[in-house]
Each structure stands twice: as C-alpha cells, then as structure tokens.
Length: 498
Image (cartoon, rainbow, N blue to C red; front, side, top):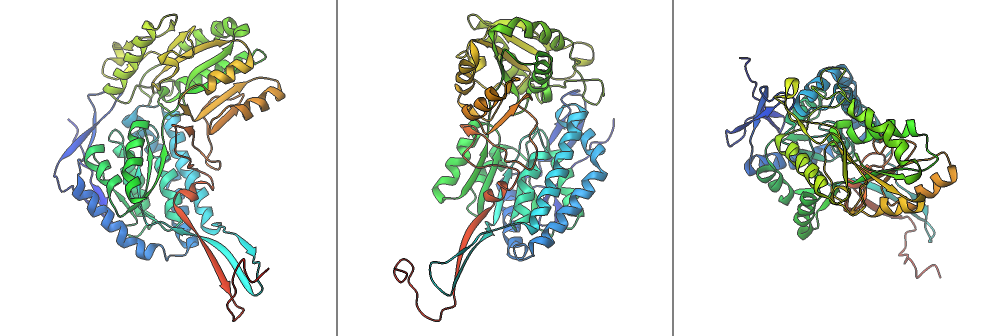
C-alpha cells in the first residue's frame, strides 16, 4: 500500500502538528478506498496559537506599503499558474468535481489574486472640499486586524482566495479554517503563499472540525472579522457569536436559484444552460440551478429536449476527461440527496422524470454517486421547490407568463442567483429589475460569476456584504475620515460658516 502523507497546520510561519496529536483522513469521494492524506484534527489551543501569531504579525504587516504587499500577491498568482494542473487534479480527487471545473477553480484563484494585487495601488478614498477655509478633508481605508476565514468544500481554493487576498492587500492578517472535506487544497494554497514571501504569522492554517476549530475561531475576541461561506444555520451561529462584541461578520450562505424560461426563449440554448446550471459541480454550488420555472406554452417542448440530455450525462470519476458529473462530496451529502428525492416522490403532483437513484455498480460502486435527477409538474410551495438540496436534483415548475414566473422566482427564502431566457430585451430588463437576487443572468445559467463584480445574495443568503470586486475591500477594512485644519485658528463646522 502507498504511504499516506501526514500534513500539518501552518502557524507563525512554521508547519506544526496539532496540540491534540490527532489526525483525520481525507477520503476520495469517487473511490473511498483511497486515502489522500492525514490532516491535523486541531482544537482551541491551535486556534489560540494561530490567532496570537496573526495578532503579532499585524503590527508590522499593516505598515508594509500596500503596493509592496501587492507584489507578493502578484508572485502568488504567477506561482499558481505554474502548478494549476497539479492542484486541479488533486482537488478533483479530494472533492469530486470534474477536472475541467477544478481547473476553473484554480484559475479563479489566479484571477482573484491578480485582481486584488492591483488594489495595492487602488485603495481609493475620497477627497472633498470643506465648508470652511483653510481646511482639507479626505477618507482612507484602514485594516481591521486578525481575520478568521471559514471556507467550504465545493470551491476549496477559489473561495479561500476571495477572502484572503483582499484581506491581505489591505494589511490584515488571517487564520484560515478550511472545510474538513478539502484540507489538501487549503494546504496547497498556503504553501504557495509561504513560498512567495508572506511573512510569518500573516497567513495561518488550522485544520479540523467546525466544533473544535470553527467555534473557537468565531468566538475569539481577537478575531475582528469572520468571513464565512456555508449553510444558513451555521451562518446564523456565526452572526450570534460575533454580535455580543460587535465584531464584524461576512456571511455567504445558501441559495434556491431559478432559471426562468419564457415562451420566446431559444430552447436549445436554455437546455444547455439548465444542464450546466443544475448538474455542474454535481449541483453542489450555492448558485446551482435548483428550479426551472418555465412558461406552460413551451413546457413540453423543453422537456422533450432536456430529459434525453440529462439521461445521457456521463457520471463518474472526475479525472476522466469524458465524465460530465462527479460524485457527491460525502456519504452524508449523498444521503441528503436521496432523502430529498424521496420527499419529491412523496409530494402530491410531482413527477420523477429522470434519475432518482444512487449509482452503486461497476465504476460507481466505491463512490458517492447519484443519477442526475429531474422532477416535473412541481408546484412552487413543494419542499423540493423551496429547500436547498445541494445535489443533482432540479425541479421543473410550469407557470403562466412572465409575471407569474417572477413571482415564483422570488417566493423562496434565499436570494442569491437567478436567470431568464428570452429574446425580448424589454422583458429581460423587466426581469433584471424585478427579481430580488444579488446576481442575475440573461440567456445564461445561474452559475458563472467573475471576480471583478460583487458576489453575494439577498434575504437569508447573506447579511449585506459582498465578495469579489472592489466591494470585497469593504468587508476587511474600516473607513477613517481625516480633517486637516491649517487655518491656525479654531473653526467650528456648521457654526462658523453661517
């Protein structure tokens, strides 16, 4: 048997074992016979050490000129380019999505890091005239301090970069707690940052469970902001933990995203979009297309084209270039998918049109595979049309007209992403205006965000902050307004200018 490598935490510039001397195994979800590595099963003492290191490093890192901080980020991006294929293949083994998608995940790290490196010379404030003579006013950004980053398993490198790169270029220091299913990608990411010259303590990595690592991190008084991506239930706990001390938190949580197909849509294009939106990453995206809301006039025509394509999707190990959908990330996630399929079977009126079963034979027998699944004749209030499944299950909801489609689209707890397929520019703009989500697409699926626009959602999807783009800087900085009076006298604003 091949030797299983043991990986360590990264604290204060050193790779160290946990105080617990415990580890956990990282299992390939496409073939559970394969142990990809052992990782530190850390606890509060490791979190405390990492936060203390980050707090010390902040004293000097914040004083490094932002363009100099950015030079390190440029080196990191360049270095990620060199190892893109290696990291993508290891990520596919670790969390299951197909190799084309993991290449995209690593590319997103590269894109985000280059983009945020550019912000080393672009952290613009405002200058504005004073109402008084001989007085100058401006605003500047200032870093917060130690930032706690809790990242999910579905984009284990990309989302880490969304959080860490803006924080670093602003002068903050970070403690990263990756998902327990994807610690290998986090280790790879941090190793590159170390090699490219980040000073000790600026970026720290602690692996382990949510209860033993995540909870001590979100409650630590020296962590000034928590940036969390994950479930709404855990996000609520993060918010509650930060509230008593008025510490900042940024939450990016669930979605129940819809593609609306109007009666004038190009159906072949809509089919392509629904396949990619619903079954990309095995449906394990917060932006995944979980609902297809379609005008009754084209409902049958759409299904006649969509269902054969769904049934023909190749499911298997994502390292095979011909495979189009990989496994669920874990046994528990597969169980959740199966439970929701049964809920859909039991819902009065819903019809199972494709899939519906786990795949357990042949190449699939050692992995967490499930058929791409489609329910038809779904009504808006059914559980499969309201609750996030995070798997390869999509509900097709027939409606009468665009107005009703928008009503149904908005009638869920979440508000992350939505899309409309139409050839009418007027209806496209009306849908853009009236659908209440943080992200909206026209003639494209609900997935496909780029790094230079804000990413995030409304309602229970988030708490008003955004990742990516310039908006990400607001999560990890505070504004300071500066007033410089060179009059040589006391001047009283709102009084002496009357």
